Structure formats: structure tokens, C-alpha cells
Length: 258
Image (tube, rainbow, N blue to C red; front, top):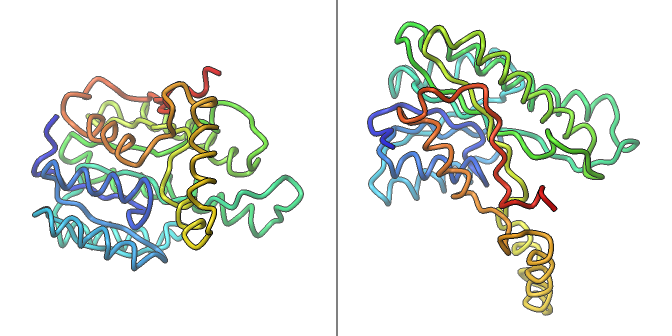
């Protein structure tokens, strides 16, 4: 599953899943554009880890809710790294608000980043991909695109929209050798819970109780980690996946089966 020598733009690569994907792509020999909007410290940490491992990367900054900044970012990537072979749309806003806590400002913020940002990033990278007759576009979505929960209705709406954006884009871009696929992770541990409990004297006990709950709720006895998503993304980005497009792959360790 080689992606060596490919140029990959990973949005939201300063934290969590995006950071995991950037690290894994670099480990496999891709040249990675590490995008961030506000998490500069996280992007620098991603770059530090890639540099230490002997990988190839550089940092770019943009607000993916703004088309002018997306266009400028893509131009910068092309100038510094070359034509983009792989786009991973990952940057997203997750507020965890209930139905009546949301207002027009939070609704617009989430839609502009999670949906419009994905759409406009696709628009920005596709012209060069068309010229090459090849490209891989990966949209990070969520199991919330598949089933309702009591989580955040607007967040779930954005994930459902991403699924249809991916499907429609896959149809339109297939004649140009460009594939578009979605990864729909379940719960992914990005270390937030441990950080919250870092100064809690009962942290170890609470973590153990959390692990016991996971054993009951998740068939494989754990939630996902960023590397789980990164490995699947690496396969989708590789030549081995050339016949895979328009697919939404659930990656949740079987938790949705319960």
C-alpha cells in the first residue's frame, strides 16, 4: 500500500485524527502538508514528530470556512510541495450542543467548516488532479451520519451532508480517475479524557471505570485511536484502492452493531 512520493494535504492535522493521519502518511513516505487553523502548537508538534521520524512535511494555515484562504492554502502547498495527490478533509467543529442550545451563529459556524469547507477544499484541489488523471479525496465523517443519537443534532447534520457530498462528488469525478471516499469513525480516543483527569487524585479509578464501560459497550473492548483511522486512510490513498469510490466505511470496532 505505497503512497511514497505522493503529496498529501491533511486538514486539521494539529490534533486527534488529523494528526494521526499526517504521521502515518509521512511514515509511509508521503510529503505531508500539515494544515491547522488555530492549533498552531499542535501543528508544530505534528511536524516535530514527523521530522524526528525522518519524514517530509511542512505546515500551512487557513480557515477552511473561507474560500479565499482555502485557495491560498492550496496554492502554497503546490508551490512548496508540488501538485496535490491526496486530500484528507478532516478539519471540523464539534460543539456538543443540544437542539435548543444551538443558535444561528453556531449553526453557521459548524456548517461553514464541516460542510462548506469540505466542498470548497475539493473544488480547490480537483483542477490539478484532473490534469494528472488521478487523485484521492478522503472525507472524515462519523457514525453520526448513519444513526441518530442524543449527541448534537447540528453536528450529525453536517456528517450526513458529508456523506452525500462524497457520493455525488464520486460520481462526477470518477471519469477523471479521482476517487472520493468517506471514513465514518465511531468513538476515537484522542487523549482528551486523560488530560481532563490529569490533576484528579481519583483519575486512575475513573479511568478504570471508563475501561469497564467500554468493555460492555464496544465489542472489541476499546474505542478507536487515531492510528486506526490513519491506517484505513492510507489504504484508501494508495493505488490498491483504485476501484473504491463513493464508499462510506464505518470504522467503530463493531459498536454500532449493539
